[in-house]
Length: 232
Ligand code: C5P
Image (cartoon, rainbow, N blue to C red; front, side, top):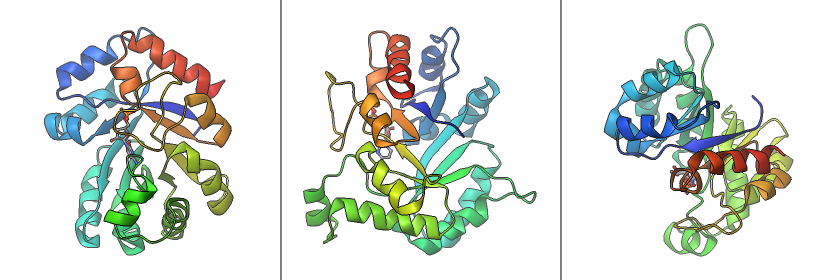
């Protein structure tokens, strides 16, 4: 897979989502379907967006006992998306189970990546509330190592950590990075943020961009700006 911009379609209905996607005259953006849209519109929205020719990152962040995650992944595997994910905090055994469940009888499967620490979490909150004594950087890197050891294809992390993840886990280990904002944009609830251009310099493979595109007055122009700044 090559580097790209993934648009987080955090909408509450299929209608809103298609109204948004219909605005793109030429491009077929790589789409992220998260909990909001999946819970609202169900698996059918995945099939419909796929049928329109978009690649899909199904961002459901599974985190449960290994048996449950394995069985859930078996169901998701039938949706034929391009990327799915779990929380690395679910442990290495859970990530291995996820991979097992995802792999089809012919050996094919979507890419599987693990969330390290949410980009809305800063170091102080992680240490105080999650009771993790390490630095945020070290936590992300150790979780990434666990994901790599479990056989996963990459992680979700901040662009600020992408280069370090590659140094630790290898250049081909994917870094999929939300927490992207235009230089003059609103940060919202995100904490570990940077611009598309800086994400490129830091080595992100994919940037995930939601509100800077979906809430823009001209979403197509905002998407094109992201692509230009990130892909150069
Ligand atoms: O609107 P915004 O650009 O902040 O959207 C970022 C998207 O990436 C959201 O859909 C959010 O759920 C997702 N995400 C994240 N941080 C992670 C994993 C996923 O922000 N660590």
